Length: 377
Ligand SMILES: Cc1cc2nc3c(=O)[nH]c(=O)nc-3n(C[C@H](O)[C@H](O)[C@H](O)COP(=O)(O)OP(=O)(O)OC[C@H]3O[C@@H](n4cnc5c(N)ncnc54)[C@H](O)[C@@H]3O)c2cc1C
Image (tube, rainbow, N blue to C red; front, side, top):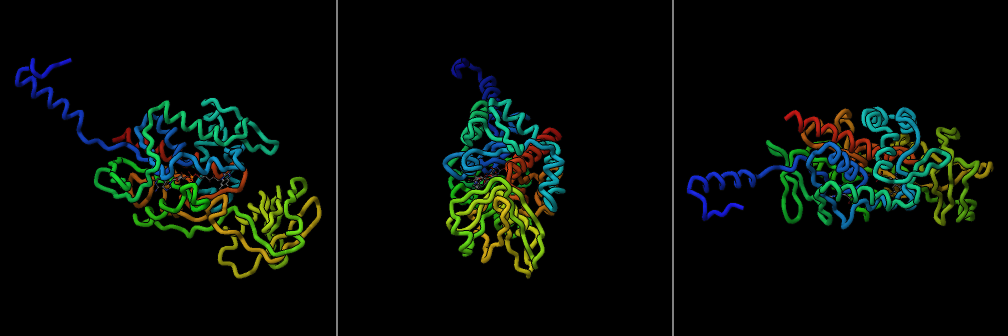
């Protein structure tokens, strides 16, 4: 160890200059806002590509919504090709997410989890879960990955503002600011706000000049006053069950799958996929719609339906407009260096592992694009 007392004056100056150089302000190459599905996958990608990053999370712990998925079992993707997934997702979302999903198809998502030691279970319909059926195991994979790669994680740390500068961004929190070269907004949609997704990312995007499509419930249950339905509360129809959207007496969309009768109305995959179709395709339409159910082969029209609110939805439809984001990089078309991933964007898919796949794939593409731009500069 060097003692300053033993140094000559010019030696002392040189050593001081070296120490000062080491202490020069440097931006973190990437600040990730949001420690949910997209933000965590982004951090994992940054670790793989050796891009320095910092993860800022509003809540006291990471992955709060991930823990709720599939009733705590986490259907994290589906054993199908990217092409098939895109066909199921449908337009206008499919065209936008095609570059992301093609680059990070379900097979790559599963391989990534398996490589981190997660045992995986496949249901007969192709949906994939942790073998333990515990969503917490998926969150642990990410937690371990952050720890093993020394990725700085700030929990209890809501980002309060974002200011682009000539050489990066100022990321503001309640108590301090961070200088970041690039920023990824991965703050989620508006559903289940207690998990931390309260619309901050949409507000930041709007302040920075992006269009934000009105947020509304995508996959959500339907309340009804229909006594024939409510008298079956507690029943769950899994086999030979379907729900159809009927407009003017014509079936416009049919979804096969589970229907559950709740004390207040209807839930289950078939009902959720119908409400997603209605939210996307009958927006602003004047004709009323209704559902017709097939329960164990018995047909049953439903009266007096209303969709439950966005805060109860599985996914939020609406968010940062796809027109304002480059689908090949996930970078904003308005603010260079600003990226988006996951549900903060106006993207959504059906039930069955599609929405987590979209969060993972868009996060992966954003960070791979950031890595390319960091290496170029
Ligand atoms: C009940 C339920 C069950 C579901 N089941 C499934 C399923 O089985 N399979 C599937 O594919 N999808 C499922 N989904 C959908 C899926 O969970 C979401 O689409 C996915 O979590 C979206 O990921 P995200 O990272 O964009 O947002 P989130 O996972 O919501 O993460 C956003 C994160 O950002 C943080 N944040 C927000 N604002 C700030 C801020 N200002 N500063 C710092 N941090 C901030 C939040 O606290 C949160 O942790 C389910 C959803 C729900 C509600």
